[in-house]
Every structure is written in structure tokens, then in C-alpha cells.
Image (cartoon, rainbow, N blue to C red):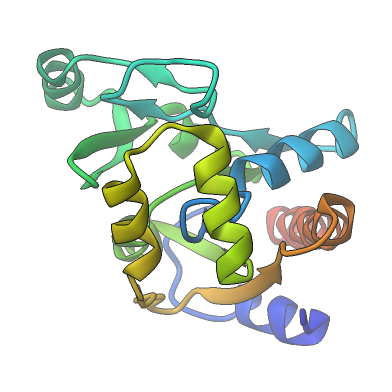
Length: 209
């Protein structure tokens, strides 16, 4: 359950880093519905303010079962990383991930920037940006298993390994909010939209100070 006062208090506290904006890091296990929540919020918040939904760069081919992302080969990713094309980059599950350098400009401009990231990227995010909110998306184990099986993107062994993981979050000074996405998407989706609206309000206040 989200506590509005706690989120606003924690976003307003902490050491000053880059920008007046808020970086919203969406994390959670495979099958939790992170991309579905982001897509839902993007549609609901269209035209409501300075909010950016970031398209990741991944060393994985694009296909209908995967998230909407920009694909690069391992070599092209390394070259892009070397020339400073990414604000943040990390490795997970045998792949390389990056967020474009435009993320820095968005946060500096006081925008709310939203991205699906791995837990491994959180320490770098909290070290880089003044306000970071981690939204941990969860769902019941049987729901995770059904969703992973339904998208047919992984072998049975890979899917079982993902479900067996019990990852923890090294959140640093970030606020952590848990969203249960077991049921209808609209339920968790509206909670996510509410959080992003409050982040927008926080960024607007920070930019005016």
C-alpha cells in the first residue's frame, strides 16, 4: 500500500544530486507486468505534464513477445557505451541494458522520467539523481508462472530459474513502493498513475525553489 506522506517526505529529503526531476525506476520479477503498467500509465497521463517514458536499449532482438526496446548487438552496444550514449548501463540475465543520455537532460529539466530497470541499476541511479522512487511490481507466484509461460519467450528451465530467484533491493536513499499486479491491470495501473502524478507535483515544486 502506498503512503502519500511518506513518499513525498522521502522524495524531498536526501543528498542533492542531479536535477530537480524524479526518476521512477520500475523493477520486479519476470511476469509481474512492469511493461504493461508503464504502457497503461503512458496512455492515462498523455498530455498531463513533463513526464517521459524511456525506451531501453537492449542486446536482444526485438520481437512481438518482448518489450518495446531498441536492439543493439554486443559490439554496437559497447561502442555506444564508450562514446557516452547512455546515462546508465548495466548487465543482467546475460544481456546488456542501457538508458539513453537524454534521461539526464530530462531529470535536469525537472521532468519525471520512468523506466523499467533491473535491481542492479538502482545504486547507480540513486548515486546520480536527486530524487529516485523505486516501484517494485509484484504478483502471486502462480500468476508469474502463467504469464511467463504465455509469452513463450523463455525455455521451461529459464522460466523456472527466474521464478526461483529471491532478489533483494539495494535502494540506498530511494523511496520504495510495492505495487501488487496480481489482479486486473487497472487496479495497480491507477495506483501507479497516482504515484506519477504526485511525482510530477514534487518535481514542479523542486523546480520552483
